[in-house]
Amino acid sequence: MGNNEIIRRPLLNVSLGTRTVTSVDVREITFAPGQQTGRHKHPCPVVGFVVEGTAVLAVEGEPPQHLPAGSSFYEPAEKIILRFDNASSSRPMKFIAHYLLNGKQELIEMLPENHG
Image 1 (cartoon, one colour):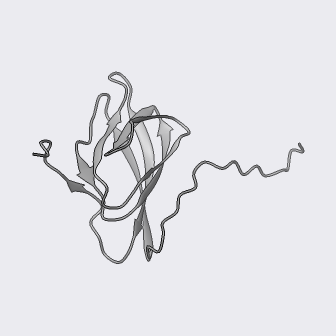
Image 2: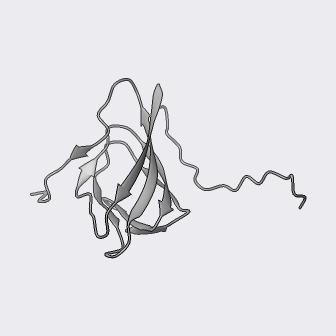
């Protein structure tokens, strides 16, 4: 491999179906040690990349994923996210989230913890 070769390593490939994306809102988000998001959902698909630390992602109906730095993730639109947490109680966790918006939408909707 030469020094000038560009390497394109696949990280994530998800289908958005027929969803229309009119804009992308990209955010750098930092969690303190032990910080948790809580139950939530997004009105739009979210694609992200863990930059530092390790995240734990649990989408309802799927097993939890441990996402170390360098991992990509996908949170489907309108699916309940049971947790997206910093896995470490002693180190921060940082990720980049790309919110794939259709028109003007909120980025997140927090849900009650008891899903009675």
